[in-house]
Image (tube, rainbow, N blue to C red; front, side, top):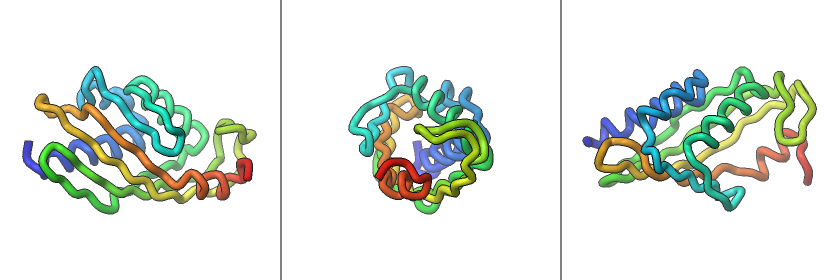
Length: 140
């Protein structure tokens, strides 16, 4: 795949999965053995857990938007920086009661590895967990 094709695939995850909530796009874009490493939580998940997380966060933040700020491709690896914004006007989230009205704006860094079949096999995600907790009033 060309660097532009890899960038376009990552933008589809941002646009179709995060912004539109279309979890079916994962079937096309991620490998069945896909693993996501969540640095802030020091754990790994798969595509099913990613779909569940996106569905849940979109219920809590109906206006959730992710903006691709920058993408860099080298070989089979893409690094990108996103900005996520939203208002907690929906369901309960991470210990918050429903609809607190809290505003979220957080930077996210993803590093994807793409396999020979053109599907993402791995993703490392890092976001400012402290900023999320502070903005939403969760814990310390």
